[in-house]
Length: 135
Image (tube, rainbow, N blue to C red; front, side, top):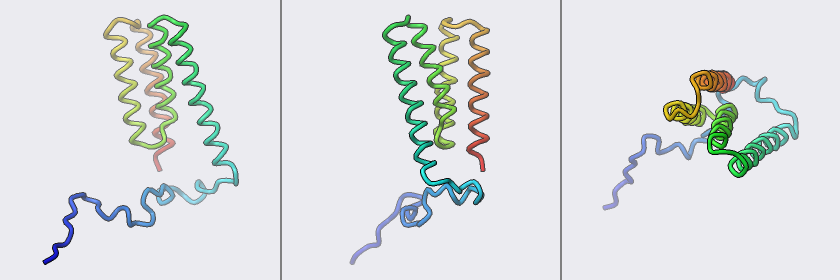
């Protein structure tokens, strides 16, 4: 006697859905329209920004002090919050950046004024990206 497979995942049939992962179902139709080649240009620009940040961070790690390297990493993480590709990535990167800022302040690496400024920048990046990602 053959038994039917026992699915343990809540969404076991999600891979058979035709629109799985499609963001279009959450967007208005006028937002979806992209000119030919525009999406590729957006991808290239984003890749160039990320590559530039990696080069800048590597340069700081080699030529700067430990504090300056840490601050460069925090600023790179702030850019990561601003460029988050989806809401889950946004939440993860925001919490990670908040932890780095709090740790820098707790270890007395940055002053209270620097701490407040970095927190304001993080909140600004989070709020702007959240508004862009919400339908």
